[in-house]
Image (cartoon, rainbow, N blue to C red; front, side, top):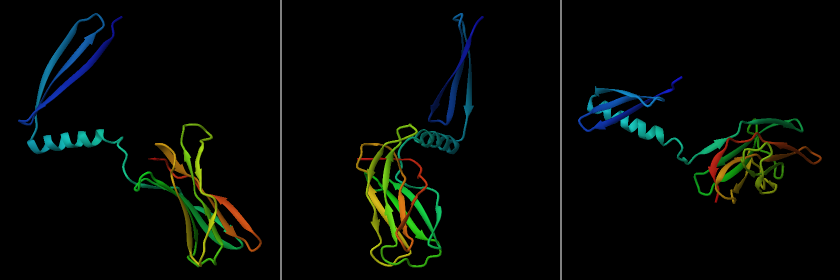
Length: 187
């Protein structure tokens, strides 16, 4: 029984043509090849090369912000939303935990709390926490509040998974945010 492997070798020259050779290599060491030539317009040829270069750069880290899905919660008859975000626009990156009043009303001082936490995604089911900022509370009347935290750990893929607090008239109710997607960051 023989195995065969097909190899395509393509080269481009600047007169906008691609030339290539298809080689079929058999395990009994006999190779057959057939050549081909494809003539393309210069504009299409340049667009194809640029597309290939951009396509192969997909693994390069881009500066961005990622958002976890909104969480919906009730406390003392008031509806709130919370969210975790992570960003690497300002190196080494930040994680944020947000709490919002759902209808935009202003919550009194001390009614909203947030604890930003960053986790290193190490591929396990219980990833290690990189940093925990501790709870911070709004110091003035506001419809939203956030706590942000610099990612102090080494380079890697991180996500934000914070905890929010809402005053219920007799203490605080605590709610986890949904996790943010991973982002490449760290310092």
